[in-house]
Image (cartoon, rainbow, N blue to C red):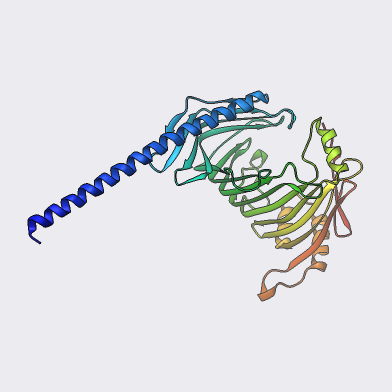
Length: 354
C-alpha cells in the first residue's frame, strides 16, 4: 500500500471515529436533557405532595448540572419543615445547597449531596448547626419490594456545633429501612449505624471528659417491632405500640473509648406504667482503668467505683493471649432501676410522655 493510500485510509478512519464520537455526544446530551427534565418534574411533584401534606418545601430555582456522566439538579437554600402530626413540634431543616443526581448509566439510584452549613431542629429541642466535608444520602429508585423504604447516609468530616464546643466525627454511615405495612411481630424500622474517630466537645465549665475526649469507634444495629406509629398524641401512640407488643431490639452495640471496650445486645420495651424496661448482656474490657478514671473525676464515689469493680472482678475471666480481662454481665432495667447482675446501680427519673 502506497503512503498516499495509507494516509487516505487513516483519514477515513479518523473521520469515522470523530463522527461516532459526535453521535455518542449528541445521544448523551439528549439523554442528559431528558433525565434532568424528569428530575426537575419529579422534584416539583414531590414538593407539591409535601405541601399538600402540610409541609414547607422550598428552594431556589433549579440549575441543571452533571453532564456528561450524570443528570443533576442543584438547589440553593433548600428548606424543609413540618411533620407535626408524626413528631410533636415537627422538624425543620435548612442547608446552603443540595444536589440531586442520577448516573446516566445507573439511573436506579438517586444521590442527594448537601454542602454548606445546615441547620436542624427536631421537635421542641433547640436548633443546631452542622457541616461536613462530604454529606450524601443514597435512595434506590424502583428497586426491591414496593413497601420497603431504604435509605443510606454517609458523611466525612462532620462537624456539629453544640453549646460547649464542636463535636467532630471523622466518618459516619447509616443504613435505614422502613416497612410501614409490616405484619405484627416483624420489624417496621431497622437501622445500622457506624462512626469512627469521634472527638467530643468539652463538658460544661471546660471540664475534661473523665476517660478522654475521643471515642475511637462506635456502632449499633437495631430493629423496631410493633405497629407503625399512627395518629394521636405521643402518649396515645406509645401506649398503642406497647399494647401491640412493640419492642426495640439492639442486635449489637459496640464502643471503643480509651481503655474501655464494650459490646452488648439488648431488648427494650415499655412496662405497665409506660416506663422503659429491658434486659441486656454486656461484655466489657478495660473496666478497671475506666472505673479509676470515673472515681478520680468525681463521677463515681470511691466506694461505688470499688463496689462495681469488685462485682466485675468476680465475674471477669482472663482474656485469650494475655489480653485485658473480659467480663460478661447481665444488665436489667426494671421499675426504673438499672441493675448490674443482682446489684441495683441507679434509680432513674420517671419518663413523662407529653
